[in-house]
Length: 288
Image 1: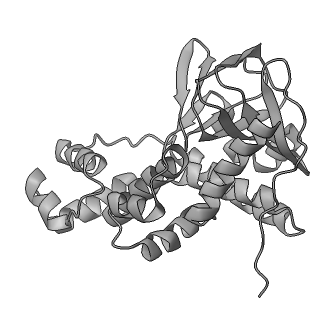
Image 2 (image 1 turned 180 degrees about the horizontal axis):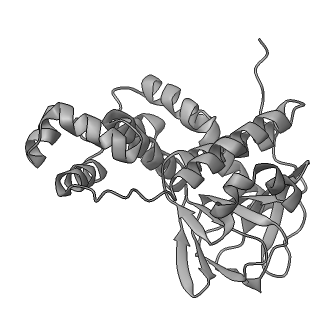
């Protein structure tokens, strides 16, 4: 089996525009346009609209989006979605911001109308399957082989399915102990927690905790913790110079090999590939 290789960044990218925005790469598919961008430090984009629906993934740096009077902060691993012709403005921090934008033409959306609710307002996803799938789409946009369009379309449908499902409001009020359990996981995800310990802390039987958690959050306790660890590790790889082994240990994985295997499943990248991608973008910006 021949391994796929990531396309290197082009030596000569399009020059930055007057707003400090530079296109590193662009891939046009049927009804979809996938663009990797680099925004200069402390730059901004005045109020504007897009003709297409937009999905934006922050890879490195930090951005502030102002839309419908709301101010949304996008850090590495954050995904923003909004529909076409939605007026918004962007401001970027003192560090270069690298993003990945997917534009969805109306003809593409018409083929999956059951997802249109996702684009009726602006949405933010800061962890979980939506950003992870966006990262996998980003990776495929860099491979650029003949299979990429099929893979991208499948990942797009899966990502929008998760986004749409997240909008479903459960009619049942969550028991207080369940939210306490989730808060405990959010705050101590890199500790060696056990189901029995969590259940004892919130005062329920472990079996009841496991069943109720999966019913309401649509994932097991273990899968939820693993996702938190991988989301955190993704941010550390893009924001720090800590070694992969140090990040793996700090995230709660028992060794680097185990972490690398799970990270590849989660994002489509190995940790080294993901970090090299971030460094490559930064070097391109400096050299440009």
